[in-house]
Length: 70
Length: 146
Image (cartoon, rainbow over all chains, first blue to last red; front, side, top):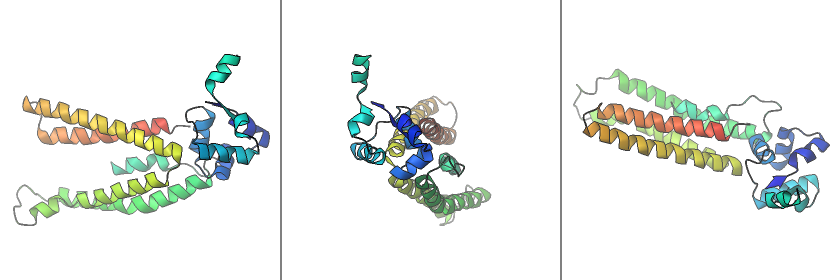
């Protein structure tokens, strides 16, 4: 699954640790999501959407959709 | 050896850790540190006694003394797993599975070699334990790298 987490975090000028604080997870988890090593659970994905005040589908999208469009 | 399990949790504070990390590190240290100290002390006590020569009724109890802090450490590990977030929990369980597989493979290989009179049972037990723990710690460090 692809995501725009790094991009959205950069816009807010938050460090990974600051975002992790807002999500109540470890910094390793934020890093793993950003680098595509971990797909978040649905509750965490909703929490991320809430933190950035964006719809969930604008942050996460299946990799296959990206491949088809590129 | 048991201290290695907590190396992955020790990170510099500041911008590299979130409040979640710091909370987890504090709780992990509080749970594990006394168990690690108790394990080291009990190992020293057992090692300083000549248990092979001593055959009184306390012989077995003294020989098994380090098992108590080892159980305590396993409990601390369980609590750490329960406190982990979803990514860490997956990483911990994967690392445990790899460590277990390596230990099983080493036990099987050691048993076969022991039956062929290569090495001793005690040596193979040590290799199995160390191999399992190293595989566990290495795979955890690799998975949690960032």
